[in-house]
Length: 475
Image 1: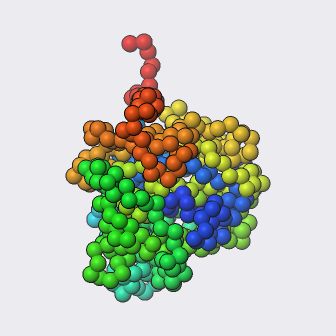
Image 2: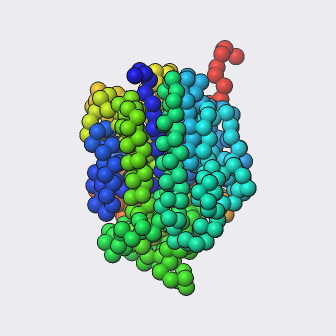
Image 3: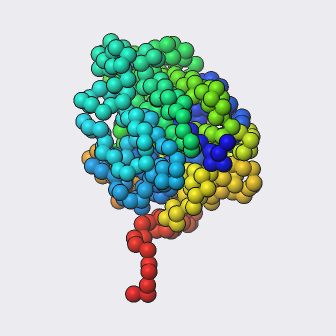
């Protein structure tokens, strides 16, 4: 057995923190992910560094804030050559690295996104379950190998492809092939499942497992309508609506003539996608057991950012920082090496994953990384709070007309959001108001608190900046 573990790094797309049964969510059964919680360490307050795919992925693949890497939005032409991705560092150190699924470090609009020197020997690529690339789309090629055409299947099954042809199934099968390969050294599989991303179209067999009437409904108060109208000039992928008529025009509609979808219908579809993900996680874990690799494999389960799911009358993502959008699952398991059944509420950033993985491999963490290794907590060696605060950024991240900029600063009690250039913000006492209904931004009695948090947020932003080349002399 190698002293350097294999790493099975599973990253879903747009999965909220409150979707794991073992961590308190009662509306979907997730026995395989629950097993990772039982045998490992779960962080209940892990935050992405941007509520949008590309900058979030840029941050956790480099261990730095997206603004420091100069990758702030979706739809970009290229990803920079430096800093290197964590997978490149691992590959140079002898790890056999494979990508399965989404990467999204540059635009995949009408093309396969261009690669940097990313360290991946295996590149099984699928930005999204679409069939609009002429070649190089591993998922569409897999469907063709099964005697079908993805585009035709999508027309035949508009509410969701059969599970055997689904992108989530493809991710698991390609990961299993990679894990079964014979090799002398350790491996890292970066598995990027597209779900539970919109268009919220799970296989019908999974959709049938969940009755919308049984769903809890979103976090919503009538005051949210006025609050979100005030923020209407700030980028978001949807417009505020009452949860019984959300601003989404897809096949979740109860009939083809309605302009929106009920939040509980959306939640049921979302749970169905998570259930399918859990089933495929189970398949991957079973192969680790079958091949005798489980004891020497670190399993990480996480997501790139969350989903509003009707909270505040919104759906999808954009320039907002509510818990459902910026807080994600983060579970790590390594049998016999990590603490067992440990649930921590420390503030954690996704930038912390890269230095953790490097230390697992016995590698030095570069000074440029602002992430902090979680290894002392994972091993049960530290009871100290991991971070005093976490940050999240939105810097003109979407192809929207408003070109919005905003930052979030969240400590153990308070969350401050500043919408720069709009004279707008949000301030919540998370201890007293965990569902973020009472925005204290304009309340006279909290202005000294707001000023203190703004100063702390500004300091944190300055210290997170890219400082340029290393100093080598006095002048």
